Amino acid sequence: MDILGYLNQHGPELQTQALTQVYIVAVTVLLSVTTGLPLGILAARSDRFGEFIMGLASILLTIPSFALFNLLSLFILNFIDPSLAFGDPPTIAGLVLYAQLPIIRNARTGLKAVNPAVLEAARGMGMRPLQTLLRVELPLALPVILGGIRQATVMVTAIATVGAALASNNLGRTILDAVGSSTPNRAAIITGVLFVAAIGIAADTSLAVIQRLISRGRITAAAAT
Amino acid sequence: MIEFKGVTKRYEDQVAVDHLDLVIKSGEVVMLVGPSGCGKTTTLKMINRLIEPSDGVIEIDGVDTGTVPVTQLRRSIGYVIQQVGLFPHLTVAENVATVMKLNGWDRQRIHKRTEELMDLIGLPYQEYGKRLPDELSGGQRQRVGVARALGVDPNMLLMDEPFGAIDPVTRDRLQEELLRLQRIVRKTIIFVTHDIDEAIKLGDRVALYNPNGTIAQYATPAELLAKPASDYVEGFLGAGRLVRRLGLIPLASVQIPPANGGRPPDGGATPPEVAIDISGTLRDALDGVLRSPDGRVAVVRRPEGEGGADVVGILDAQAIVALGR
Image (cartoon, rainbow over all chains, first blue to last red; front, side, top):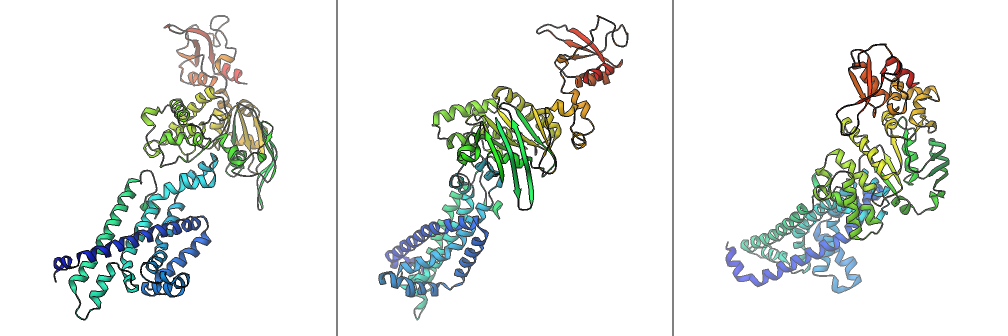
């Protein structure tokens, strides 16, 4: 087992795969926030909708990732444009669905934890609902919302490797090839796993730092749960 | 002037406020007081339409509030609540500036006005402007709440049990401060409280609610204490009402029997050991009588800058009771 030797031999290949991995995670998180945050706001406003959408998001998480990516590829993306049916697109699509639960749940929790007296003061001073949301509710809930984004990021960083089975050239490729060969290459597997872990930890740490910086006076994750 | 004309608020099978007719004059402090659930808070919140009336009209200076866009209405009325509701993620200065920003003031004007208001409440900008609400005491937070409500210099201030959750010593100071502030700013203040002493201390007029959403008596504190309109009102005012009434009568406003002209009330020749300043009330004089060994107090006027005091007159318990009637 020679990790350094493997790194020497496959350096450029690993670099490409790592960049793809980062790209997939970044796009996934961006798309997940743009969909999950509005859903989380609606979920905080209406308990009926909140329970429905969180139930749905929970069910999505029970679908095995390999099956989910393939189902999206075969039954949806293939009909939109066959070029979307392989590689990164089905991977990202599946990951966005997985990321909904932590993002919606945390947005809902954070918004519901805003002190009602603060909201009454905002209303009584003549803030419109949108002004209250943008100037008071979202800023106050931001640390909790970021907590959800953090969870989602770490989760999709790991699951993204499954996309290799649909020809996404990410770090999963290295692991899958090594596992699948007749003589499993342990150095390759461990190298791939370490790279994935490094990306996950780096993303998590930087989000944690941001979270701490913006927490002053706001609702902290601990207070909201 | 605020005028309630036949205002009713119904919830399903319950009536919170029942055919309310009430006139609040500009520049007056009107206290809405009564037991829990009597409709006093509902009355207050109907003024800035946080609650919409089921029936009737509320006019401000002759304009039906129902015809004014609701955000515009609220931005023109100061609003202070019990839990203060400061924005915890904004600094004290940013909190004070909230309504100015909503009204689209420019930065310079906001800065100037914020400094002015923070001076007014005794929390100077230099020292407190950049702090977060969490770094202030409860009393300081409540003062910031008042400054925020005064932001764009509204004519009217709605205060919903603003001192309800504050310890008695701080509450007393905040009440004094509100009176001092009111002498400067002269706003129309509608103030909800369940504390009759607070109502009597702060109010130019008191609206005492029945438990069922109607007003039992609407009068000045002195009238209320002197002539309760019903047994219910008398019961609400409680046992100490006549003593409290003495607290509303300034010594300067009554005829005090002179010390020399005519004999002092008990005919004694020695001057009383306890002196009370003329700036006090009959209640202060009664206090003095109770701690005076001979049951008499001298009411004195101290000329500014001099050591001595002129004796205006002498009072004993009997004289105080007579003056208080």
